[in-house]
Amino acid sequence: MNRRPIPSLFLLMALLLAAILPGRLLAGYESPEYSVTGKDGSFEIRDYPEMTLVSTAMTRRGEDGSFMKLFRFIRGRNERSEAIAMTTPVVMSGSSTGTMSFILPKEVAAKGAPLPLNPDVTLTVHPAARYAVYRFRGSTSLAAGQEAAGKLRLWAEGRKLLVSGEPLFAYYNPPWTPGFLRRNEVLIPLAAEAAK
Image (cartoon, rainbow, N blue to C red; front, top):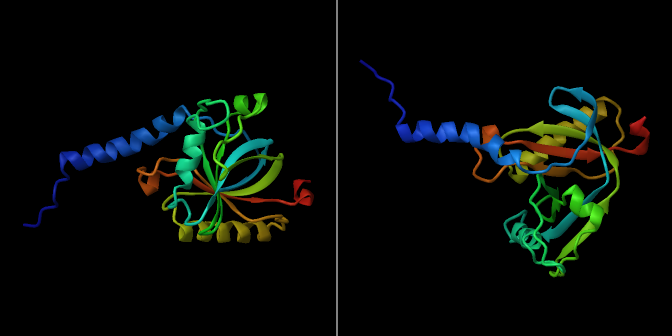
């Protein structure tokens, strides 16, 4: 008689924690507020307010210490030695090279963010804008991101939306989160005409 193996207690606990923890871990993190002006399944059109970002260049899509440069900034490596709360998502632009950014909390941006001490780290203000957005789960690899961006472009073209820039990739979860529980997004800015 053929018996199915019984999952070990360890595996069951791991799956339970994976199902419970990501939401709890993200619950305390500030994320940018946005309004949804259109929705079609996993696709949305969103309006975002002005945001202040701290950014650094990537040479190997997050495998080059870029995350730690930004993390050190929010941990106090700035002109005021000020600790700044972590937010979600981590934003990446470009492909294997590009930039990685953290969005600064609204309160920090409102009072004026401290300047970075590391010359590789910069502060930028992104103006309010409208984006086409596609939410997807799974891998955070470059290939998965490019595939998601392709789906978003096709969706935008099918609705005659005018894109006005390159995709941004937003990753909300810690790296140990199983792929099927991840919240990943790709955002493409829309031209002013698309805002009407």
